[in-house]
Structures are given as structure tokens and as C-alpha cells.
Amino acid sequence: MIEKYENRVHTEHVVLDIGQGIGALIIYTTKALRGYQIDVSLKGNPTAKRVHTDVLERRIGGRLVCAAVFAELPEGEYITWSDPAETFTITSGSIAELNWRDSNIYVPPVSSANTERQETPSNLSSILPPRYQGGKKVSSAPMGTAPMQYAENGQVAWNEMWTSFCDLALAGGPPHRDTLLEPVPPDEVRANIPGYESVLTEIERGLRLVTGLPVLRSERLGWIGLQCQSEEMAQWLLRAIIVENICVRREGTILFLPAGPDFRLEKEIKNVITVTAKTHHYWLEHLNQ
Image 1 (cartoon, one colour):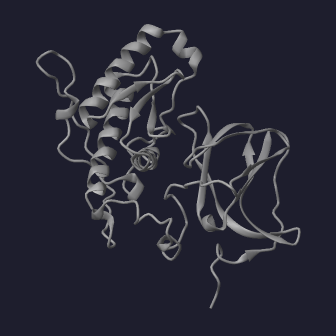
Image 2: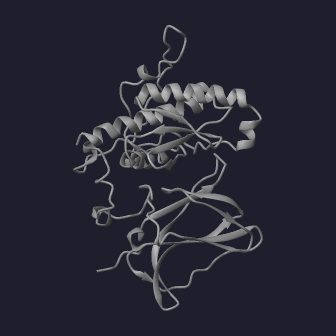
Image 3: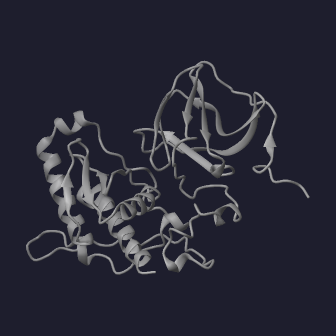
């Protein structure tokens, strides 16, 4: 029987192609992530493609370690597609390192993990709603663009726009956005405070309508907070939202979603509210299992 590539111990040397304008990254992980695929992308660049590599078990210096090796990355600021996300800097001719060995890092299911490993306690089936359990096929069809609905007072009726949602990207369905929606730099917010306040007001109103949860202003510019009912709920929603290509961070039971002064009503504002509505809908189903 031939042992699978990601399961065997790798003793071969890794060639790092670093030099002018190119660096490398090594992420050290726990054994639980062996075989999983880790994605990274340039931070702040919505058109940047993700780069991925597998976590492999390697023998280095006489001891076994699990690591993901990115042999060549153009220099720049990067972000990992994980929960929590980490930022790191690639510099020309240098090797950056991240240590996840003592951290509880969740890697979204864009991975090469096989079925056997997904049956461990950290698998997806334990965190997905009932409809995805038992091997149900997930639809790859995206959700149709919902037309904007307006109330009599002229405001968007966010709670009347959707009758159904496409499958969760967390379960293998299509992500809501093609590119990652990130918060804008604080300097851009300070340059247009009236526009920022207008965006916050609309996102705040929309989030309340689609979830019924309290919405909080963040002390950090570029974010708006959603107060979840528990840490379990916050963690579940964070995992579901990030793979819909909306940047999100968590502080205890509060989720922080991106907001910027140039967010448009039918684009970025609608993206944030739609993804929150979708993932909250599936959370309620998950809660009732």
C-alpha cells in the first residue's frame, strides 16, 4: 500500500527560492493540521490571489515537526486565511516564521484534509447545521442577487430582501464575494468622518434588522461590532463569515465587521449585511439541531 503524500514523514530538503524581491514563509503547526492546506494572500489587495501549501510532517534536525513551507513569496504585507488571521511581512531574501504550535488555530475548509482526519473532534461535521451532516451534497450554485427592497420611508428594508440563502461556504458552497472585503486604514476614515458615520449608521440598522442582536461602535476605526449571545456563537459566525470573503475579528462575544467611508449601499454595505444575515440564519438552524 502506498502511503499518501501528506501522511508520510518528509525527509527531503526544501529548496527556498529567495533572493531579489522574494522571501519565504514557514508556519509551524500542531500535528492536528497535518495534511491541511493553508492559504495566504497580500493584505489590503482585494485582487490578490491566494497562495496555498500543505502542512506536512518533516524531520528537521533529528526531530519531527509539522510545517507549511511557502518557498517563494513576493515581498509585502500578507494575511493568513485562518481563525484568528495573522499578518506577517515578507522581505527580500529572508524567511518569515509563524508559530502555531501553542495556538488553537482554525483553518477554513479549503484544505487537502482527507475524510479520515475530518472525523476527528476538530472536524467540520461537528460545527455545521444538520442539513450538511450525513454526506449531503452541497450546491455550488451562487445565491441570486437580491433586488434592493425599500420601506415606505425610503430606507432599505434589509429584513425583507431574502427568502432563501445559498449553501454556506464553510460547508463547501460558493463564497459570497470573489475577493476579500477588508476594513479601510484609519487615515482614510479620518479623511471622511461624515461618510464613515453614514456607512456605520446604515450597517448598524441593517445588522439589527437581520439578526435582532445589539450593534456596537468599535473604538478602532474601520470596524463595527455585533454582540453575539455567547462565545460559541461568536466563534461559529466568525468561521462562517471569513470563508464568505468578509474580513472579521472577534473580541470575546463581539464580532467586528469591516466598515469604510466609501462603502457603497448596493455593494460593500449590502455585502456585510447579506453575509451576516446568511450566516446568522444557518447558526439558528445549527442551534436547533
